[in-house]
Image (cartoon, rainbow, N blue to C red; front, side, top):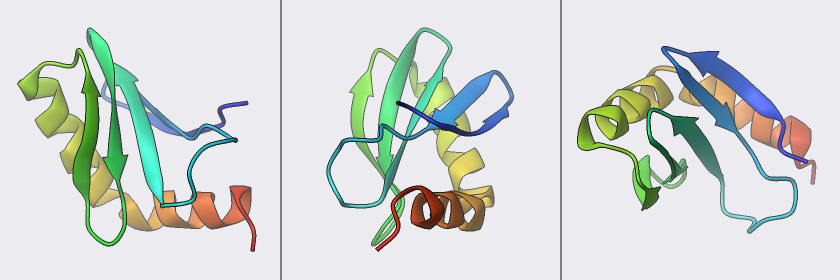
Length: 79
């Protein structure tokens, strides 16, 4: 299961239900996918074929909507 947190500017931001406990978000768009840590700070964890331009755009969206991502994480992964 991979619930979508939000979609914006051609990107889909989502979680995988059974993955590591450190808060992060996946993003799919353009020509690839990436994973960003959300805590303790926002940073790229892995890049699976996304162009630099798309990575920068995705990170900017994460920074703008970090509260929404954190709230969605806590709702999806209680406890």
